[in-house]
Image (tube, rainbow, N blue to C red; front, side, top):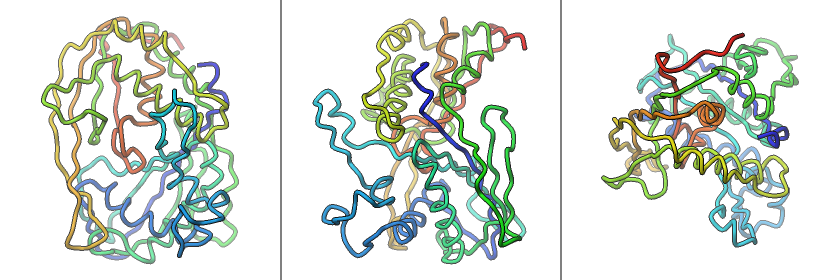
Length: 332
C-alpha cells in the first residue's frame, strides 16, 4: 500500500438552489447521468459532431479520455480491464427524495481521481450549464449556490466557494494521496473482529442477480483492490497494475456471519421522455467476523471509491462500521 502515493483524490460538494420545481428519478444519480453527459460532451468535445471512434483529435479530448476511452490493454493478463472505470464519482443524496422546490437545497458530492482532478473546471461548467438547461424529468432549472471543497485527511471543509463575485477563485489544492488516507484509516482501530458492511446504494457486480449470490469477504476485498489498481493504472500514471495476492488470500479467512440484503429494481430515465432502462442492484447489509484489523484501511478506501459497476453516478456506495463490542479504538 506504500505504492499509493501517486494515487490522488479530491472531493467537492455542489450545493444547488432550485429556481423551480425539480422532479428527479427514484435514484437521483440516474437523473444526473442522463442530463450531465450530453452537456459535458458539448463543453469538452473538440468535434462534437463526430463519433469518438473516427475522430482524429480524440487523444487530445477530455470527453474521450474520461468517458469513452476503452484503453485496450495489449497484455492478455489484463484482458478483464478492457473497459476501465470512470475517474469520477457523483454521490447523490442518500435520502430517496424525488422532488425539490425552490425553498429546498439539492446537493451532489463529486470525487475526482488522478488526472481528472485537473479537469474540475469542466465539471463545474457542465453543472452550471445544466442548471440553465434544467435537470430531471421536468427539466427543472437551478443555480449553483456554492461549492465546498473537502479536506479528506481532516474530514473537514477545506474551502468554500460562493457565486456572488466575478473574482471567485478555485485554485485551492485539496487533493490527497490514497497512501495517506490508507494510513489514517488503518490507525483508527487497534483491533477489529466484527463489522457490518451496508450496501447503501444499489450494488451491481458481474455474476450478480443469482439467488445464490453472496458477497464473501474475500470477494469484497478483491473488488476494492481490483478497482483501485485499475484506476491507478489508467488515471494516476502507474506503469503497471498493482498486485495484492497476499492480502486477497488472507481475506479468505474472514467469514460471513449474516446476510440481509434484497435485490431492488429501479428505472434509469433514457433520453426519450416516455422511455426508460430497467436496472437493479442489491441493498442491505452483511456481517463479517474474523481478524479484520489489517483490512480496515482497505475497507475504508472502498467506502470512498465505491464498488461494483456503474459507480460514476453513485451506485455501489458502501458504509463500513465495526461492532464496538469486539473492536478496540486506537489511542489518539
